[in-house]
Length: 319
Image 1: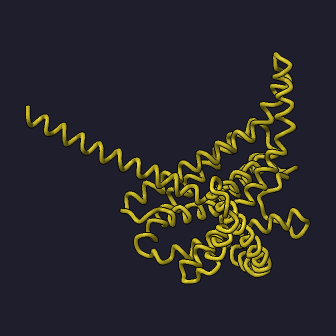
Image 2: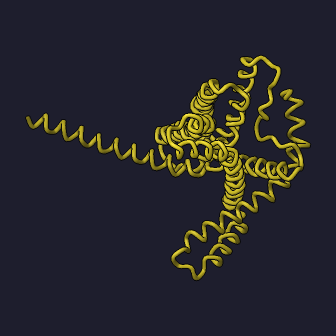
Image 3: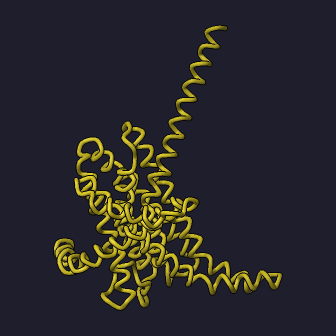
C-alpha cells in the first residue's frame, strides 16, 4: 500500500512539473508572439487579396490551403532552422533579426509611398485574373500566397526565437511550435471571417426576418471595405513600429545604445507629471518614436530594395 502511495506521489509530482512546463511554454509563447505583431497584422491584411475575384464557394477552401502551407512553412521548414541557429550559431540571430526588422521598415515605408502615389508597391496580388482558367489561377494564387507567407513566417519565427528566454532545446521547440500554430490559427481564422463577412452581410440584408437584422447586414457590407483599409493602416503602422524597435534594440546590443537611450529619455519626459498614465504614455511615446525611425529607415531602404536587391533577385530567380 505504501508503495502505491509513493507511486501516486511521484505521478502527482511529475504532473505538477509537466503542468508548470506547459504554463511556461504558454507564457513564453504569448510573450514572444506579441513581439511579432507587425508581421502578424500584415499577414492578416495581405492574405484576403488572394481570394478576391474567385467564386464565393472557393474562398474558404483557398484560405484553408494557404493556412496549411503556412503551417508547413513554420513547422517543417523554419522551425528546424531556428532551432539549429539557436543551438549552433546563436550569434547569427541578432543580425537576422535586424535584417527582418529592416525588411519590415522597407515594406511599411513602401506601402506608404505607394499610397501617396510613388512607386508600385508590393503588398500582395491585385486580384485581377480575368480570362484565365480558374483552377490554374487558383493554383497560382495559392502558390504565391504561400511564398509570401514564407517571408512573413520567417520574420515571425526569427522575432519569436529572439524573444524566448534562454532555455532548453525542448522548451524552445515547444514554444516555437505553439507560436507557429497559434499565430496561424489567429491569422487565417481572422482572414476567413473577413472574406466571408460581406457574404454574411448580404445574406442578412436579403433574408433577415427583422428590419434590424437587414439593417445590420447592409452595415456589414458597407463597412467591410473600410475594415480592410483600417487593417492595412494598422498593419503598416505596426510594421514600422516593430521594425524600428528591432533595429534600435539591435544597435543597443551591438554597443550603440545612444538612440535607444535618447528615445527612452524623451519618453520619460513626455510622461512626467502623469503618474496614473505614466507607463502608457511612455509606451506610446516610445512606440511612436520607434515607428518614426522605422519610417525614415524604410524610406532610405526603398531605392536599395527596388534598384539593387529586386533586379539581382530577378536575375537570379527569374521573378
